[in-house]
Image 1 (cartoon, each protein chain N blue to C red):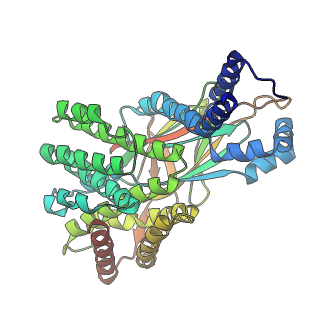
Image 2: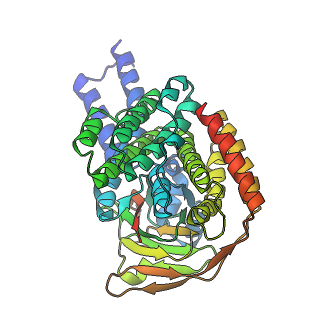
Image 3: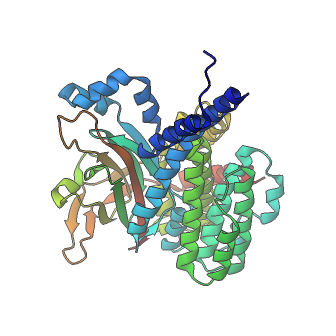
Length: 146
Length: 309
């Protein structure tokens, strides 16, 4: 009987684990990244994922003219500075935070509405490490009238 | 073989499993693959060129769709006026029984709610947050909109900034709740519903005005830029029949949007040293014609009305 209870508990625990760790990611995104968007209004969208050192992710979004945006890319404390660059549909790099001391946010406005790509990378801190760091990375957007 | 673990050991096992999960931080689809292949993980730790290449090929792609708040804000900044007759009537809510209806109309009502709040329609805002809550409850999105949300909204009903912030918070809660449970397709359907409602309001407001030099029409044309993202997200959820139905509608709209060609000139980033805000200087043009616009208005109206009926 006890074995059964233990087994059920373990299964329940394992099933709930992804929810638990994702909830942590949400709290991180809300408390760390969203707050930093102020005075821009967060758009309500949620983009966060677990990345490991050396891993890259891309996010595509349409941005509108006559609107000022803040894009924020936040990494959990155990990760090094997160690198991100903004690329237009012609492949032109419009911003790279590597040249801005890994600034976590970028404020911009557009004269023409267009699709942009945000390329996020967790840099490798030490090539000889045995266990690469892994943590939550959130990408959030805020906007305000131009 | 029958040796039993003492209760304290069982508790310790459970606790360590839980803590291990906590330390690992946030989860993602990628983690499953990583755990499934421990050998590859060891290979990754070496971080040589080949591994880096592997990480590149496993690159994750995300698409961000316009949220109901963004859609309403874009309408407002284009000079839209407020017309309550364009909203999905509250009385329709009782007819939404299926998950698809509730997801689409959660998006639709949230866009209506955002639109009303941006134009300081306090009573409508309160009424529509209640309906949005009912839709969220119907989808079992727990606590996305709860009693304290409603109370906070009532307490700040004359503060537009706080109201928009509350709506943004409820969207984030709904979206994260669904994604945490692998229900990305429902999250996408909510956003598509909201987007269709925004497009419907915009096309109705543009009405029979000339399409030339019309800022609302410009905003409608801009929506072409998000259609492919929507299609990609819906295709990713191909195993969900609801997503398949919505995909058909978006493909139908795409067929008309494809008749519009948008030409974008080269971007030149210029930084304002005082504000540190970059302006992406560029020019763009499109070839929208009245027949294509009318076709779009017609399609959007049919699709939107099918969602709310």
